[in-house]
Length: 113
Ligand code: FES
Image (cartoon, rainbow, N blue to C red; front, side):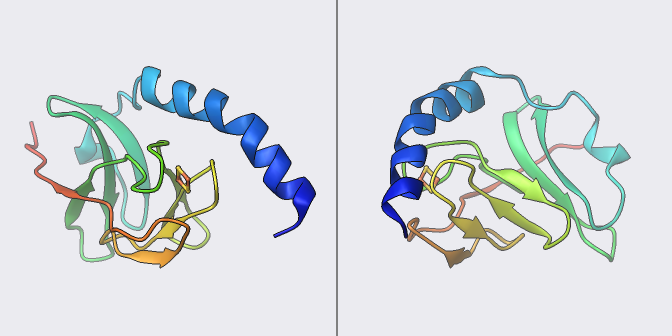
């Protein structure tokens, strides 16, 4: 990683951390997510990273990156959860694709309603 990239990430980290933590999730009901899409939704359980797979099953995860706590975003092209702060990437089951995060996103229960 270049020195410039590290500096830019360091400058942007506090803004992205606070913006992600304080901002509300998308108010769209989970039932409206189409197959292959994911979003950070505002639910009765709080903010959740929710993905609907090709079979139509919903999977909910904590949206909090296990590196330093930023809120992940869904990458539609790759179908991954990506962290905007330092670039960690997670599979839709929460497992780590690449760090700096080492631990998976925690699974959560989603009550559809
Ligand atoms: Fe650092 Fe997510 S907070 S990679």
